[in-house]
Picture: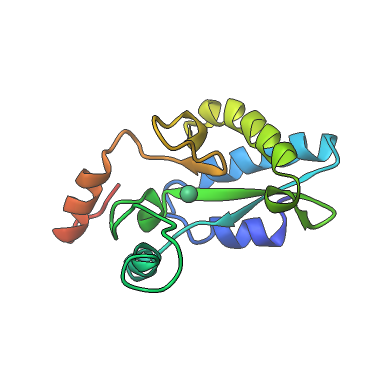
Length: 154
Ligand SMILES: [Zn+2]
């Protein structure tokens, strides 16, 4: 049984990938529970507008730069990616105990592949350890092209 926040996040994803993310989260949550932790999907679909606002941060709007992804160049923009958080009794360990959180993301990353997911910890360059995506082997620019042509992305 997934927690409410995870359910809500998975509900924002492309319907064709939801079953695999659901199975993965179920497994990861059982692993977490065995360690007295909670593992939750905290972010899923981000619209192109939301991505534009994130990209603007530190560039044309105040704050520091938080993303290098322009609208349409993140798997989140197509409902094909989630970010997870590690919690203990509701406390967000990614900010309070980053080492504990990192260690658990790695464990989740190790099982992700068996569900067909790609773990952000395997990325070349910036390692995005809370991130999991299901790209079906489709490059992001292929998705953007389909989107721009009004085609189904999967
Ligand atoms: Zn992400």
